[in-house]
Amino acid sequence: MIVDCDPGHDDALALLLAAGDPRARLLGVTTVAGNQTLDKTTRNALRVLALAGVRDVPVAAGCDRPLVGELTVAEDIHGASGLDGPDLDVPVAEVVGVHAVELMRRLITDAAEPVTVVATGPLTNVALLLRRHPEVMPGIGRIVFMGGSTERGNTTPYGEFNIVTDPEAADIVLRSGLPLTMIGLNVTHQAPATGEIIDEFRGMGTRLGAICAELMMFFAATYHRVFGFEHPPVHDPIAVARVLDPSIVRTVAAPVSIELAGAFTRGATVVDLHHRTGRPSNVDVAVGLDVDAFWRLLLAAVRALGR
Ligand code: BDR
Ligand code: CA
Image 1 (cartoon, rainbow, N blue to C red):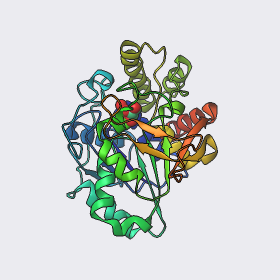
Image 2 (tube, rainbow, N blue to C red; image 1 turned 135 degrees about the horizontal axis):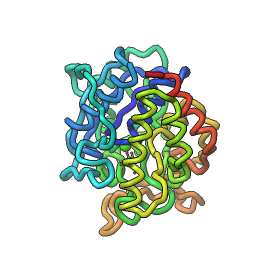
Image 3 (cartoon, helix red, strand yellow; image 1 turned 90 degrees about the vertical axis):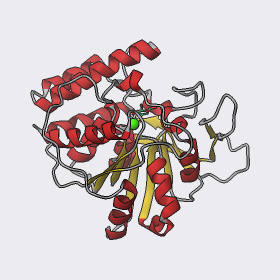
């Protein structure tokens, strides 16, 4: 898989899952502006991979703003660095000298098997890849993205952050005809990092475990302040988990459109769960989560990384 991300506390856990699970083959990591500016999300991806001891996975920086309009970051949730909380002081590797879209093109072209693209940030890089290099589409087995919701939003009443940040990019991806899986807030809100989960991280007795615990404590504080949630939901690693063990996330096929024009609903994912529109299904939409199996997978991956 390729992970395209904007770390971000939950993106960090998604990277650790992709790096630490024995079944995962992480071909590359690409970064996009979203939770913070591109320079910060890129530095955060490099820091997380360095802390995880991952040295042989290329990292490339991608788009620094959405396809249309200006970037609005999620500093209220992820802090000024995009990954506030723990001390993440670690020597980092360099990014490769090509744009994220070019790295994705090369990795997909060179792969012996179809590649899964896991997107845990705004879909800007992925949309640009499909527009500039449509020839790679047969090499993409599936795009699994964290974004949207079958219910309400978290950034506007009906819009989820990744989709609201770049609705045009999401629209391009959803109309691509590629196999798509949407991991929306309706399932990610089922996986809060409770006190017991934070204790599990801390109990690993490693620096990485302690960092995960501190990341979740910072995330808990901002989620409590902004949303009044008792525990913070970890969205992004669920997209990686779905790829590693599909039984963890139950999906149904449905037509999904992105609202581009709504005065109050721009960036909403319009999910026709009851097939009332007569449109063809274009997305496998997550509707259920095996919460215990998900946490077992994630904790085991972080444990396996040691450090
Ligand atoms: C999504 O928005 C970001 O803040 C998180 O990293 C996640 O990808 C949740 O809406
Ligand atoms: Ca993210």
